[in-house]
Image (cartoon, rainbow, N blue to C red; front, side, top):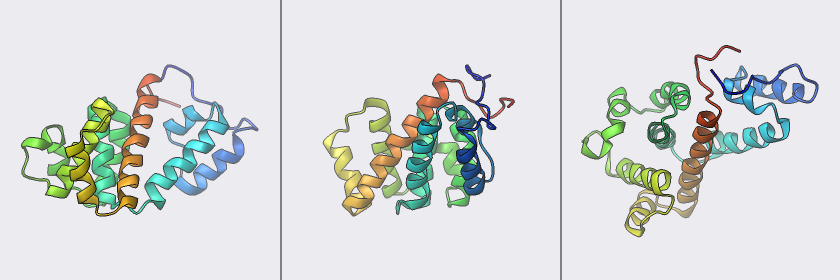
Length: 175
């Protein structure tokens, strides 16, 4: 159960953003139900995460591997619950999802995926990224734009998991 009650989606200050979220995403997930206690924060969050997930040129399979790895490292089941189906749609296999906790010992990941996962691990676990890990990820990305988008994705989903877990927002919560 979440540590705070979910926001009133009919509150006049929240209503315009609720309508936008429903129009763009179909429903107001628990994450946004919590964020809507502060419509200004919820609006900024929505813009930022929309840019990361829908406007970035980072390939969808890499994006979702990053999100799933961040969720695993940070112990964020809501994040994993929301993104596992998306990862599968983006071409990540169920075997890869199952192997993510021990990806380094698995032969299911390409060299590019391995470089991205090592970068994700370094950013998530240690914040500072060792130069060889950075260099491998940069080479795997092939452009500064993709490197920035990869870095922003790792950072964004660390933000998401920390928010979710601090407030104990979970998929099984009742509204």
